[in-house]
Length: 344
Ligand code: PEP
Ligand code: MN
Image 1 (cartoon, protein in one colour):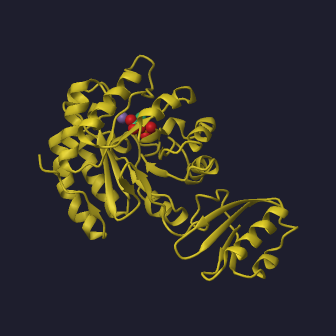
Image 2 (tube, helix red, strand yellow; image 1 turned 60 degrees about the vertical axis):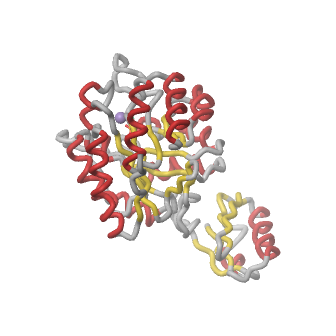
Image 3 (tube, protein in one colour; image 1 turned 90 degrees about the vertical axis):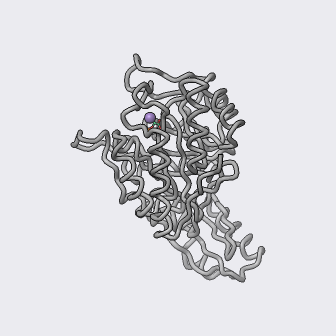
């Protein structure tokens, strides 16, 4: 349950509620908003502490039961939206943040050329896989640590913060040492050990939706991270498995406004993995921003035909720049902003 304190509640009022909750065995999670304090109570003995008894305490405005199995990530728990900071970039505020870059880091030349191009077009964060989760063990698996080094080089040159995927708890420390944001891929959404470990970090997390995950399973995955103390989580809709094979996955755009209703966490959309086809990336990006997405993550490659992974869904730098121009009026229509292209 969530205890909403009155705006005029004193620190003593808050303390009193917290000690009552603790006496009854509840775990307590405090959220101090600009207007009022909200206290989340997890577990505990509901018999020992009736809702009415809590509502009678000084400074308490109301007690709201949280009916979902996820608690900390729910809107009931925190009514105001969470803003996630990646370097100096804020996701979940008024700006629609575009993350762009290749599926995988392939070479110094490739990542630097892509980083420069996407930055010039208005991307705010650089993506690039160093450790790649490939369906086939015979496919390119990524450059590993070398890839991380090249990403850091691209950041040093462009100033763009970097997001990159971690596949395993064993490489988490190595990835976390370089990344500004840690990506948990679709295939790892329910790797609970990994979720717990990233929950203990101070770094923001990009949590992709599992291949066939329900919204509830996805939010529970986010709950694993938040329970360890890390609330800097961005949810990423990247399409789900459906009966149809015409596109790589099926983009569930309704998830965007639905998640905004259920959770305070920012939501971004990955139209590249959601469709698997570069020519569907622009229309789905426009639709995602119209639906209220807090950002996009788009695959861009200097020469998609020779890409070592996901070439068919990658935009050329020119197509990416065109898309950024088309996104701006859509962002404005939903009262959001989009970074302007930087002058070379
Ligand atoms: C990726 O972003 O490169 C990726 C592998 O995505 P997903 O986990 O969504 O398949
Ligand atoms: Mn990819």
